[in-house]
Length: 243
Image (cartoon, rainbow, N blue to C red; front, side, top):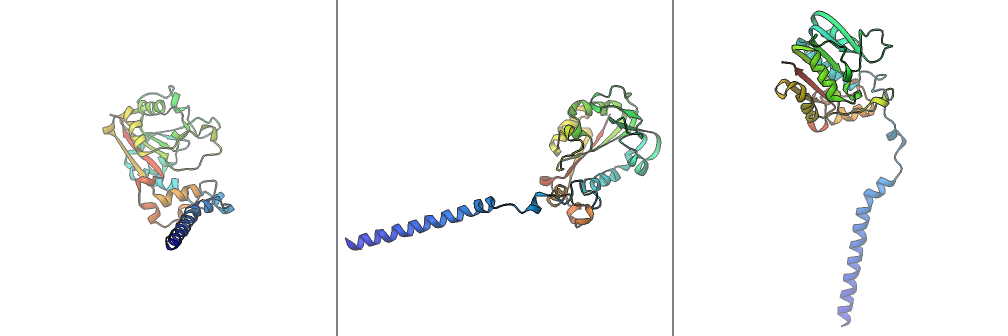
């Protein structure tokens, strides 16, 4: 009887030790989580997308996308905010317009909200360069419908939108959206037809983390930019043709 009691007591002690050990193991992640976060992890390297450090990651991807589609930038071209890409990548340009909602932009030739751009003539442009704009337009379907309307038959719309990007503090009151590949496929298919829309995702985990941290292109190894991982897309790019 005494032997049985000792055996039971030993078993009970082993069980208690096992439980205590399990609790300690399970508690470790929570203890780490509750520790104060080092101050440097609360502040990005840059709050201006890395402009002061070099070339912003998003800009590098936009440049590559438009360079790959430069054959479409021709004839009568409409661009947002300035004619940067019309001038640097365009060929056989017959007419160039700049669209902006901001009337203080002295370079703009057309002032309009793309979602209500009825004053822009229909079937006027061979190419519309719509970069980094749709995140600031609440009525996306209307904006894309207007983009389709103002293109000539066979005209091309080239679009860039962010998937991972910090909020724009200057335009915080209008910074509505971030985009996915699937979302863009469905959005643009409504106006252009799915067979006339090509959507690509650029970027990967390293590029997306770098974008949030405010790192510049020059601070990342080349493979961190050229490898594209759909699970960690940094930016989404659309080529849509009006037929």
